[in-house]
Length: 130
Image (cartoon, rainbow, N blue to C red; front, side):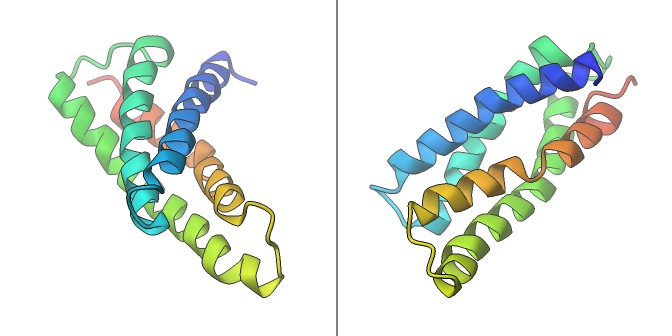
């Protein structure tokens, strides 16, 4: 396994933890569906800062350009995270009578799902050399 991908998974794991913990806290303030989106934004900010610092080499682009590209890649990932998280929590788990922390498990699966596609997007688009 490529060292850069391992670093991406490690920093992504930290960002995922920020995402999951903030979603858990946000659930006290808003519905699950909205909390998933807000938590994703917090995790995404963490992911950008860590990836830029520890995973990818300088792209030669401005920070603003990298952030725009990072957001575009993550909009696609957010669609997957939201669809998987909400689909599992609201449709699949009730259908199979899964009741052990369904929102938490659904959100964890959703957050983990786009790891490979996000890495590819960030390596070849967000942080690609100018």
